[in-house]
Length: 206
Image (cartoon, rainbow, N blue to C red; front, side, top):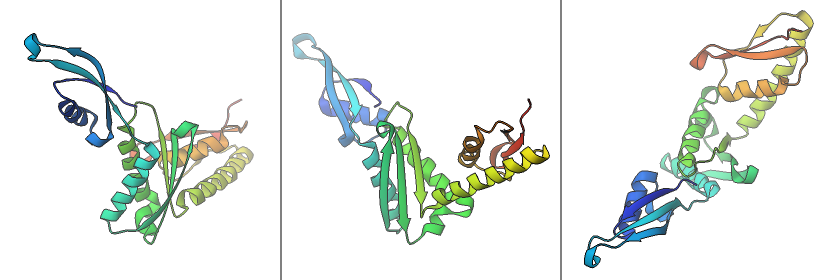
């Protein structure tokens, strides 16, 4: 978890300052006294505090998602699971507005996932992986991409001609990179910038 040292005269003053620096509510901060400096005749005393976020990342993410959707007037059912000691968090949503939340080519879903990851990252200095799925979209998309990767790789291996796939986001490109990582006769490279960035599957040079 992120931690910060604060010099303040009172606990409340320390909480207020830590809240500003850590950008989280005072209720989610624990204080520990590091050292105390007493002023002359007790005046001007200053205490050094260690402020640490006290947040369950999984629960915080769930509540944050539900709050966003509540503000949009959308009810949802949220499930989650974790890996790597809680540093990989997978959220799955089911709503009556799945198609709206997913958006064209999953763009709204990717944006919501980015917002969620950014929110949770403020609570920790460690790298966390946050994945969000809505209505099984990601799960189904991964299957489609893996089928596409295998089919295209077989074609490239047979014809010895490189194939450029349609532009994809970084997550989708990573799925194909991973799927073909162990292939001995083909390799994958990314090309282009921004939304035009795509993947090329080409014969591997011997």
